[in-house]
Image (cartoon, rainbow, N blue to C red; front, side, top):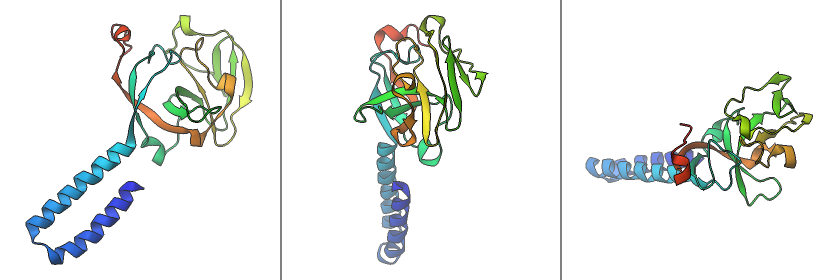
Length: 191
């Protein structure tokens, strides 16, 4: 939206400026406008977040800093396995980082800590044996406009198993990369 509005304004200004300014001034202006527009767009597309807790261990640990991008969900939907930033459904002023397990229309059940989506055992090799829970859940069909999310540290995560499905409008970005890992996590980084 911001980008489209910026392009529209720049296009209108080009038409006006072609008749008013000499070519070198016009080129300098357009380059400056483009750079300013890109800085504004980058500032609204990427956000810094600090991980609070170990619910996404071993991928992220308490104190890690990540970069969250809002761009993927402007043009698309969250997909299974995306690591997303979301507003906590019970208190939307708080944000959580969780993994999307199931999309709308999927049936989710958990048997002795093993996750099944549409009766197919989920390949979740990213969850170490010591982080697996032994709980039972469901089956539950994910309703339209909602997602089922879980943390990778299943024993230590508060997620859709406790507070229910997450509305699509509460998922505000996808974790793009780690900016900075805590000291204790640098030696056993999964990447």
